[in-house]
Image 1 (cartoon, rainbow, N blue to C red):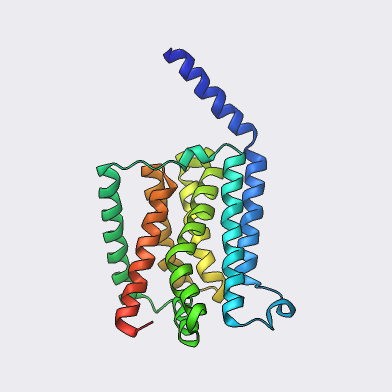
Image 2: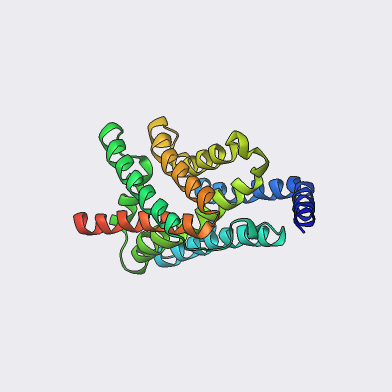
Length: 239
């Protein structure tokens, strides 16, 4: 029985390796769509007449579709089972708490050493200019819920799965964290301090996924942190 399970496991790994290249190419395609949406934006002719509510509603819809593409690719390629199950264990919860504390300490350290990131400044400026549904969509729905879900699906589940054969070199983690950081930096102009600031949380989220083997835990980690920052901003500045 053990021998049969071992043979079945090898057959499964070999079958997945045969489909690695198409999966990797599809992952690159989704990454390009994601980067294009945030760095190129929507056509001016299409959105110039839209209200803030409609514009940000459309933007969030498109971001959600990217997350849907990621899930579809993972399911269709039969790779969803690698990270698509949620299991609660006290060890996983302990890691969740430790990573949250590590993230908090890194945030304190980076705030003392580096200037504010252009991404955080831009988000604050956008939030000040918005009101009503547009503010709710960007500040709360996007920042606390949609962004963590889609970013974890794309930068963790997709990228780390596409680079699974390079796990022993930790390239899957390094590439995932780097792309995650670039996605927060590139749209506002490259600067190394901002890249470092976002690289460390990317590494922490990768560590959560690697340890728990569940995308749900990394999403929960990411969403909890973003919600904590949003609540802190609400208490301090009122937005």
